[in-house]
Image 1 (cartoon, helix red, strand yellow):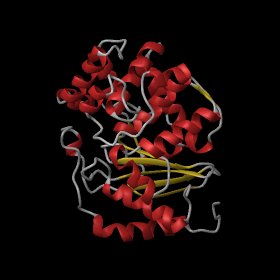
Image 2: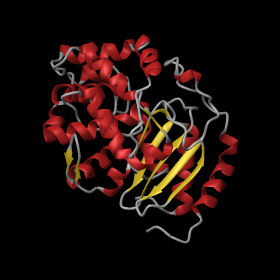
Image 3: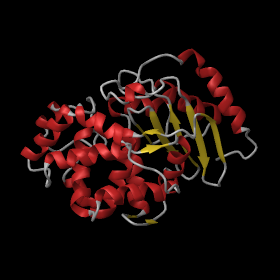
Length: 308
């Protein structure tokens, strides 16, 4: 349980001191040109307890492209809209391969291994395109509602940059269509998917939005009607699949359900107690933030607050 006497500001400052040897390691996701322009030395963290206490450090209020963290929001929305039918089109198993693998999609006859790899997220996006009146505005409003911030937007510069180089994702979309696992035109699905990835949020806004998964209570808002049982399953997916082929490493070292993005963000939850978001653009070879992974490992180790 949480300790109200713990000085979490001091704890976060101590974590940053221990991170100093890791600063400068890794590099931004330069295959998306606009992400390569982000200052690689940025670092922010926001720890938001469900009792209302919030503790921050560094660039926690600066917005960044959440990229694949958006897959948690889109999967939650799709799961709320169509229920267990979602799992007829996308599986729930860890991938063990790179997040943009074409080979795995071929081997498994067009059924993506899970909704957090790119192929799975494209299928989820297709579900939203078919079931929302305005899939652009409705999903953006969903994220705004969760975070409590009405000014969150898509970053059009990131959208244009990503569209210019989205050859592999386009291949995945067309390949999914060839297997009959997209109902809409592949390029329209791809454009919508890239918009979702371009959403910009700060660590504080992300931590607040992830309270949905930390509370695990029924949500009744504009898009989904998520039950506690569904939220439990979304946490399980984050635990097993949230970090691509490094999910086992994150679970072993950190011990929280979470999701990373190649914009350098990571959001995670300790159910019933807190959610946390961290941002540092330098990534390891698996596409996960080096400082973010280490910061969360230190957080759970020093606080003793993890699910294990």
